[in-house]
Length: 133
Image (cartoon, rainbow, N blue to C red; front, side, top):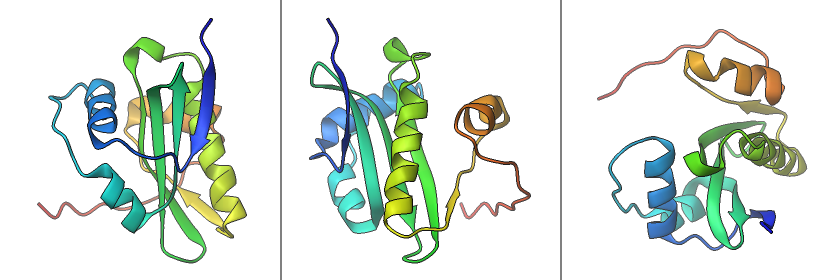
């Protein structure tokens, strides 16, 4: 039987998270310094574990005040469509609320509208984006 658990601020293994991220975003695996980046910049992060294997992840960065930002929501394709992403985002939102944040922002591509707007409860807003590189 598969045990699924959600762990806030779990000890990050850079290789494991890099490979999950690559699988979720269909890119070539390249190991990044996730643990260092999260400790420095994130308000919190949440991992979804199936029998102790990382199968989902989300992080929340913030401005140190009222605004927090959902980043890097990722679920391994073998575990998709099971509500893992939604639970990751809702857990992250709860953590941001507990930290005193008033707003939780997320940017997403149009094909993810149903997930973020319908499943997770975000509302659409106007926003701008400036490409720096």
